Length: 543
Image (spheres, rainbow, N blue to C red):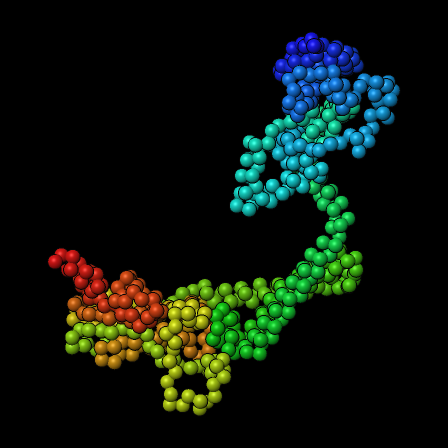
C-alpha cells in the first residue's frame, strides 16, 4: 500500500504516489533553477509543465490507470531529458545543435501567430509541409479567382484550425520534439528573433506598401531559384509552346493574305468587312497589317530563343531593321485607316414614292423575294460560268442559319394611309467624305420590290452597284395601307428589320420546325396594326 498525493498541473488534477511526487518535484525544481536567470523563465517552465501534464494524461489513458507511479515519472523524464544534458552555458552553441533524426517528430497543423498577414493559415500550412510560406499564399490568391473558392477555404480553415498559443504547440507545428532540449532551442531561437526584431525596428515600422514590395521581391527571388533548378525543363517546354503558337499564327495570317490577294475582287466588292477598304490601296493596307501583326510575333520568337535557349539567331542590326519595318507598317496602316474613316464623316439621304396597286378586298400578302440576282462577284465565288443558269431562276434559301455576314440594311415600317390608297416610300441613306459623295453612295444602290396582285415581295438586302464600297448604305421602307386593310406576313419577312411589328407574337403556328413557313395576320386600325390572333382570343374570352 503506497501513499498518494493530489497535485494540479496545468489545471488538471492528478493522483501521484509520494515517491514519484518527490522525483517530479526535484526535476521541476532543477528546471526552474536552470531557467531562473532568463527573462521568460515563468513562461518556459509553464510550457514544460503543460507538456508534462499532457504526457501524464496520455499515459493514464493508455494504461487505464488513475494514479501516476514512479515508473511513469521516470518515463516522462527520459523523454523530456534532464538538466545534465545541457552541461554548461559555454556548450550552448554546440551542444544544442540538433540531430535531425532525434530533434524532429510528426508535425501538427496550427495557425502560426508569429508569421501571418491575416489569420496565420498559410504560414501554418507551410510549416506543416515544410515549404516556403509564399507558395501557399500564392496558391490561395490564385484560388480566389476560381469563383472565390480560395477565400471560402481560407475562412473555413481560420475557424477550424487552432492557433498555436503555447511554446509546445509552436514546436509541434514545426515538427520539433517537445523535450527540454527542444524547449531550450525554441527559447534561444525566440530570443534571437527578438534581438533581430529590435535591431530591425525601423524596417518593421515600414508602411504596408513597403511590406508588399518586400513580399514581391521575395516571390521573385524564390521564382529565380526555381527556374535555376528543376524549373529549367518546364521553362523550355513553355518556350516551345509559345514558339509553336507564334509560328502557327504567322502562317495563318500569311495564308489569309495570299487568299485575299488571289480573290481580291470577290472580297473587296462582296464580303464584309473587306468591302469597306478602297480597291486601289487594299493590297498595301492588308500587307502592312500583316507585318504589324507578324513582326511582334517574330520578335517574340527570337527573344524566347535567346533568353531560354541562350542562342542568338540574328544580331542587333536585324532587330533594329525589324523595329523600323514595324513602325513603317504601322504608320501605313494608320494612314490608310484614317482615309477609310474619313469616308464616314458626312451623311446624306433622299426619299422617293413608289406606286402600290389597290387590291379589291384590301388584303395584302407580304413576303421576302426569293429570287437571287447573281453579280459578277457571286459568279466568281460560286464558280458559275456564263451559260450555266441561262433562263433559270436562282432562289435564296429560307434556312434561318444564313451564312451571309454582310450587315442587314433594310428596315420596314407599316403605317395607316392618310387616304384610301396604298403607298410605299423608300428612304435611302449613306455616308461619305462629304455630302455630295454620301448622296452618290446612297444613289449607287439597287433595291427591288415586286407586287403581284395581292402579293408584295421585298428584297432582303440593299445592294451596291457599280462596285460601290460599303459606306453604311441603308434603306427604310414605309408601307402605308388604308384603314381596315388585312396584312398577312410570312415569317421569313423577319430577315429585314421590322419596326414596331411584333411578328413572332402573332404567328399562327408555334412549331419551330416550320420556321419560315408560318404566317402572321394583322389588321390596320386607327392606332396602327393589330394582331388578328390576339383579337380572336379576346373575343373568345368575352363569350
